Amino acid sequence: MMSRERKKATGSAALHDKLQILRSITHSNALSENSILMDASEYIKKLKLKVVKLNQEIACEEDTLRQTNPTPTVTVETLGRHGSFAVNVFSDKNCPGLLVSILQAFDDLGLNVLEATASCADTFHLEAVGGEVLQELNQC
Image 1 (cartoon, rainbow, N blue to C red):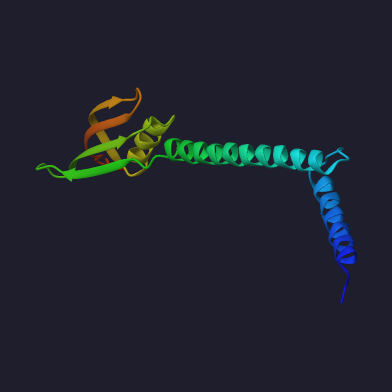
Image 2: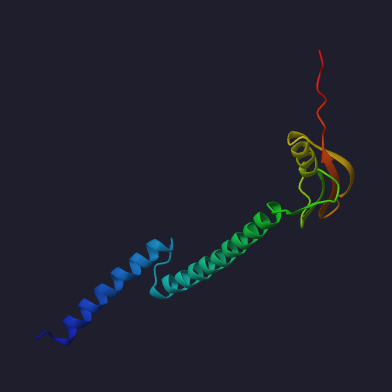
């Protein structure tokens, strides 16, 4: 059996080793046990604040990504006349270049915009009426 003093000495040595590890991890310059524990407590508080701050930054970034990459809602209807159509495009956030891209897509598809109303303030809204461009045949 171990004597009480020897158990106490072994426990004290283990505690001292653990305090030195704690001192090292927390970058403490303290020498007394109480000061090491106080420094560790402050270190833990700072880490908790960093976690809160990082979580806030992550949430902010996620919100920013959602706001800067909105998916526009597009509806297309055919109108009574041959080849005519109505297009509505709506986005919660105005995206620079969106109107130009849409008009370029109409052109690439060979569609002619006859009338359009666009709002590009905080949100983006386009209402366009158009039809197919008739191709003229060159006669020789």
